[in-house]
Image (spheres, rainbow, N blue to C red):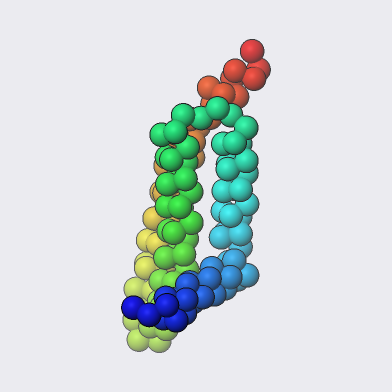
Length: 121
């Protein structure tokens, strides 16, 4: 792989991120939530494994939203021929994003709740 080809790949990936950020409200909200969680992660004294888990979960949720967006676009291309599956595909991908987000939320509460309780005491 040449350096030029590698740079082109990174620019294409960046373009995909920009497109999704510009056009998908949920992705923007998830980016905002990720920034907030990262900010909180730096405030509280997290163990290394907790911080790694937070980063992995943020990456998982954002990646799931990117996949959801890509599959929605692809499903829209198929709509005229396979209309009864398009809604199911979109709903299943939305459910995947929801499930990963709920899992991240639960794990985030397990990690951060003791720190917030410590602030109250």
